[in-house]
Length: 147
Image 1: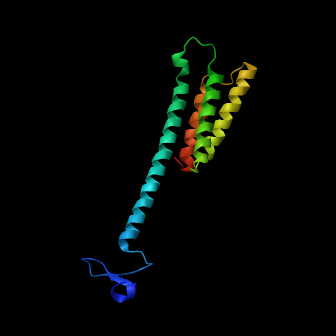
Image 2 (image 1 turned 30 degrees about the vertical axis):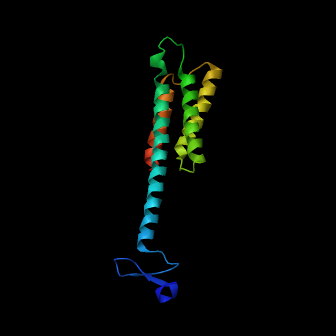
Image 3 (image 1 turned 180 degrees about the vertical axis):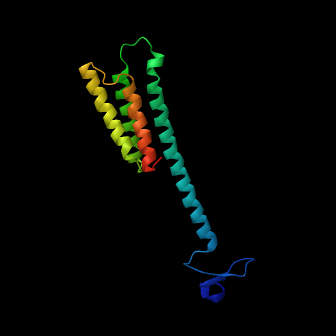
């Protein structure tokens, strides 16, 4: 097996000895680099999901501008906004990302109030309700510190 009975061998050019079964400093650095790369990729993916959810929600708020002659867009905005928030929360939970509780509460509130307004044909605050609920989700997210 070589010098030292095969248990120790000299690394080339460094003059250090490595015992088999114990990882070298180079291997440890390599594994730490892989772990940090994995963490960076997961964080990037989480941020992409959050940005896509935010962008889609903002597009929903543009519906009254895109269709100015529509009678009452508030229930549709609430339902679509709630569906987008809940879909983003479910996708993040499926990927084992942390999901803020205000996202869940805001999504359910938007969806429930949208269905209520659609059934009653009486908007509570008109076009301001979807904006107020989404602003509440954003403020709650910043207050809990999970943004």
